[in-house]
Image (tube, rainbow, N blue to C red; front, side):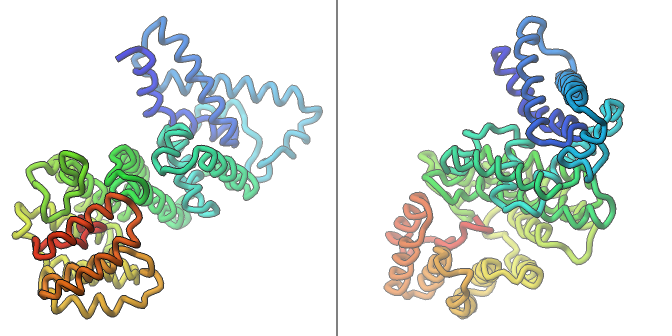
Length: 428
């Protein structure tokens, strides 16, 4: 690995810590990011000659802090009066930064503060995801744009608007405590979940999965769970992501074609990720009763992870877990996945009325998995012509070429395996 690539790898890991430490002091995300980038430039110059230090993160933080001190001094010298500094943007949200603050907070608080600011509920989900990947994932604007398959200017505008919105909303750069912190955690979990899902089941382009997005979400989730160890749903989400990520290698064939859950080679599932996921699930279940939605989804994923073969899957337990999840979420998508589980546990005849009852759900209009599920059930019941019509409907609604290819393959094999065409979301 070249020195530059090694430095870039260090930066990807250490950037959130550096930006978080500086943002606490200067209370300005744009300035904090600029100062962190200046520290990276300095590292590229110095480390190429002197080598990478034994603690590169500490070197970057110290360099960025020194530049923050210089910037604060410069700003103070430009101010005619101390009162003018007090009237600067954000001043009434917190006192003006002081150089003595530079060593006051622990790194954990710096990271948690940056996560909470990046995922502030005042921002849209798309803006939170883009800002989080930029500040905490260490991704460049073009990398984020490629990940979500949108134009780079679109991502750039989202990030700029997000920072402006946070400034206008005077979002505090303080770590809330107690109930206030608990109230903010769900917005963070939502963003991490969104990032992971886009990697696990890509909604755009030709790729079935985008492993790099799953990796970024997992890293963010693990950090958050360490920072808020008493939050059950943080551990529940980590458990869900670990268990789902354990299947990534098995979800695609040699040419990138989708491989559904019941067709996967379970020998290719990552046993380390499964162990980590089950451990996180144990922590989540020990912290909360009743279980939250992420923990319930993780428990469903654990049923698959514990089954050595598809035939050994405890579908009755999965149905019971979906019952609880449907009660918590009131989501038609969850109801659709529950119907799939019912078909596996009790047969297609039991499940078809459940699917038919969802036909008029506004949240499922245009959702290609609804006719996909119905096609599978009709196939199981020997109603091939009706199933073919449902597959055609699903094909017209499918968001990606991989989805359409999968549906086409199933249309050619209407008498195929019991896995069906349905289970791409929670069961794939």
